[in-house]
Length: 137
Image 1 (cartoon, rainbow, N blue to C red):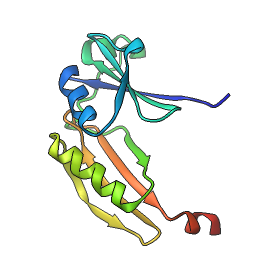
Image 2: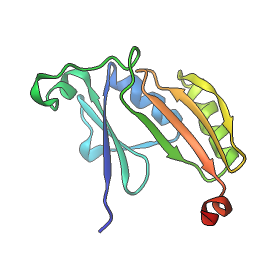
Image 3: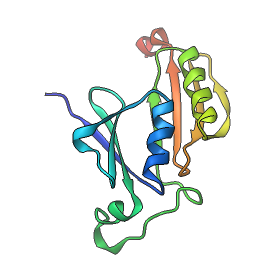
């Protein structure tokens, strides 16, 4: 059985976040979506749980504080793409949907990536790596 990953992210406005990621082409599993949480399907084994800040606080152990992703960064979510063109397409969709560029594109020849901030300030990287370069390692 494959291991699934569920990335939990706090969001200020669940509807806005669902709209944003919907415009990037992601769907939501209705079985795990309600007015406090949305299960965004990234792939067959990768999901992002978008949780209202109130709901997210219920999961924080030990009395830790909720970080403001607009002011600090604890994680960068990186997703692979099948081509450089798909990287650019996803980045353009993110900016058109209300995201902001996080930094200029990076082209390392064998790897190309773009970074954007979602409406809550979480940093997402979309990247392509040349399969031939990976196999040489």
